[in-house]
Length: 258
Image (cartoon, rainbow, N blue to C red; front, side):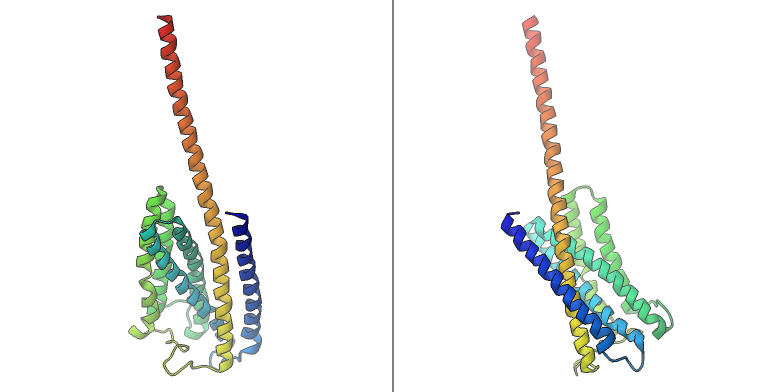
């Protein structure tokens, strides 16, 4: 990477870090001090301002995996694979957090941490799909083949995202139907909408910051792998040339002796 590219990249990282920090502080203030307490659920409802943005980030992450995986299969450009695996890793983390925060929210409301509810079950399936995505990468030694297989999983796995989103409409579930994207408008006070909006922005910036940092790591890993492969090839060529030269020297010595 050129010095100008490094400088531009560092500015991007710094900008995302500052934006994430500022909006996250504002979001936390609004969650606990600005937004009113829900009259039905009480303080536990404030998990909503974490749970919903995390779910949005999981959707966004796997949509990026979906697009980048298609682009990789079409163009065979490794940068698309770097984008896909960086976004998938962050998405898997946020899907885990969605399941955890949902369980913490569900315990006082439903009386249990877990139910084999349609929304919860399809979300867990999504988690396992992308866990498999990384298992494919880990256990297939041929890097190019691992990239192709992972891209296919990343494309097929995204089918579960709209199923998760529509599950509360297609099946009877404990999980409430969407209250923000209703046809008649959000069923909540403006202060809650503002708080949710800031939280969504904060987590979106945080997501792009994490993906940006992860991509830098993946690029460095690929460069190191390429360097190691080049060094191994160079050593193999050197040993081959040495063997050829040694064989030629032996033949030359035998000829002189004869």
